Amino acid sequence: VQLQASGGGLVQPGGSLRLSCAASGNIFSVSAMAWYRQAPGKQREFVAISTSGGTTNSAESVRGRFTISRDNAKNTVYLQMNSLKPEDTAVYYCNVLLQLSRGTSYRNYWGQGTQVTVSS
Image 1 (tube, helix red, strand yellow):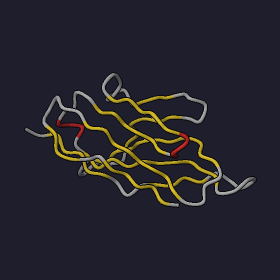
Image 2 (spheres, helix red, strand yellow):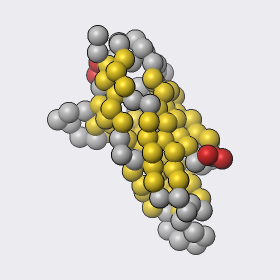
Image 3 (tube, one colour):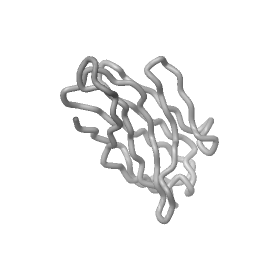
């Protein structure tokens, strides 16, 4: 299984970016899909999550600015980030809970991370 994240970059404060993370490989079922981030010198923190049932939730620090969505047919999760602030600068990681075959346990997989830098 591979998680390929993309869409990061350098953006000015107030700008927007859209991150994507596609899961590929021998996947039977995908459950929750989420985004985390890690700023320099800080611990990795939760950003947003989308469950297989359609529920979404996000950290208070990004609520109203970031939107998580998913395309189940493509096993892809997105993070639309608007009104970006310098404090949003971090490496963003996708996390997917998935099942490789029927009857097996769900396991967490992490993407490689994509850098988001918000600076003027």
